[in-house]
Length: 233
Image: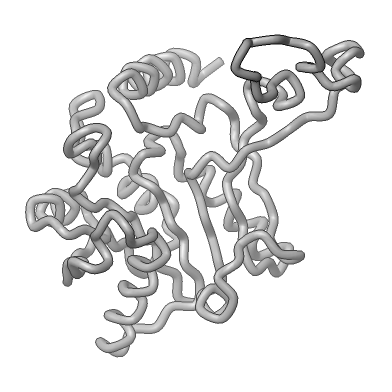
């Protein structure tokens, strides 16, 4: 079985300029995903999908492959990540390289580890899954949230099921954006990762930070230091 990891890292970030190569603890953000993929030893190809020659050079420096850049169409604000992924698969197919399993590793999830990738892949194999998606438990139950009327009135804000001990409330999970593993043929035919043969890989909250704003870099740096200090405990 031929495996490819794709790290989508276009240069046009509106929220935080060049966040995919912004330094986190001395390394470009995308480097953490490249290194985790390499350390997992699962991939025949680790590809960084980018529209930037500068990004491509950095990716190659850390061990990724970037034999071609994204087109303007697949790097636009309206293009989805899956548009870019399909473009990568097609370009490799033109070179005679076909892959059976695809893993998407967002560069904005630097705390995802090689062990996380390996464990998610184990689920994919053991369950003969179409897809496995990284998840984490929500910090706060959505049952504690609701829309507010314009006047801010709280009448009916909380649902009746919230009126019980917190420990008895159902646990809720969210997609954390760190890992997406999918059978390539299934993806190209269906494009749905959440069907009856799609499964969750539950990750710790401390590995599920998604970098979007400047403050997220500070959180990630703190958690990296905290994880290193507690590694042997």
